[in-house]
Image 1 (cartoon, one colour):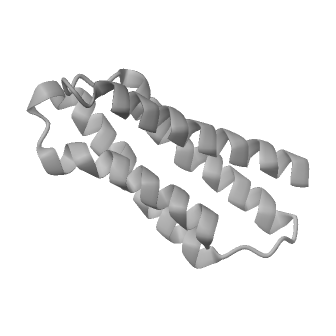
Image 2: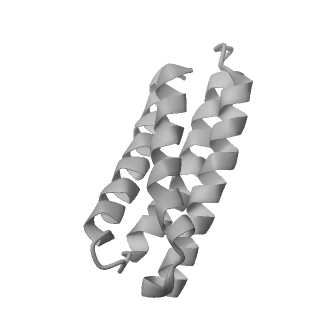
Length: 112
């Protein structure tokens, strides 16, 4: 079970890294790639699967951190899809919520 959980944790972090990298690639002209939104949407799915595997495997996890990460992940995914839809007209708070949410999400995962 541990190996399966770590595979999903790896996919979770890989999705966040891909979404962050695509945001950095698009930051100059605000032309986000569709993959950014799809990776931001896949990250909470992989994270939730990893958490479920950890819980059913009897591992002790921080439920508060998982809940905060899930809510933050959904907010980032929604902001990413809004950015894809509006392109250059994306409001600055929505545009900059994407990398801030990603960095905070990874920080919570690492330090909590």
